[in-house]
Amino acid sequence: MAIMIERHTGIQRQTDEQFGLECPYCSVYAHMSPQSIPDFDDLVISRPKHVGLVYQCDACSAPVFLRFAIKQFNPDSVELYRNFIELERPKERFQFSYLPKDTEVLFREALACYSNNNFNAFASMCRRAAASSFGHLGDSGKLRAFDEIIAAQHIAEIDDDSFEPIKRVLFDAGEEEKLPILNRAQAGILLEVLKDMFYQCFVRHGKLTRAIKVRRFFVTERNGGVKSSA
Ligand SMILES: [Zn+2]
Image (cartoon, rainbow, N blue to C red; front, side):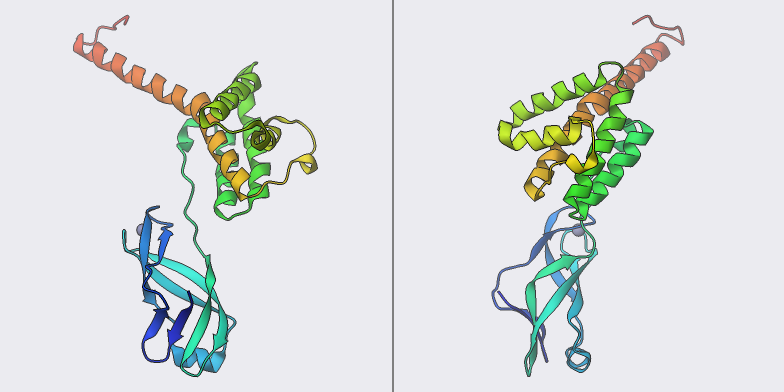
């Protein structure tokens, strides 16, 4: 499917297939409609190697910036390679407020690496985020975290060979250069496993204790300010 910027009609695709992306603003996988297309005459004069196009997300109307490499200049059209670079990637989300402060800082940076497709920088930051969290979980914190990721492996039915690099990233102590090299698929598993571990160890605890505190508060209020032992 070629993408062409035509002299008279603007952008054209050689199929009727609609163009969809995960929107970096609303995180919905939505159709994208062309919003701002470079001027054909200007391109022919300056003959750049790349062009920037702005699409509009059909779900939230936000502008989405994409960069395409130019394949060739024709008399009445400019052909673009179909692969493009998303200048803003969807952000990975997490309930960061439940994490210890230093773990939060490290995990935010880990997710920023992941969103930018830097999967091995992501792995290194996951190790640092995990290591910082163990100390906050008490004496047997690392052991408890390990039990959580093994439980996640069984729930998600991930085989031992695929799971081995994930365990090594999170739990092997020692030199950074001995970290396994992760591809996109492995980084995706690491992301979900570490999110689940943090959820089980921090978010669940934080949400539950907060909810129970609120219940107790209302019982106290109903009893006319007399403290309930419940
Ligand atoms: Zn959107």
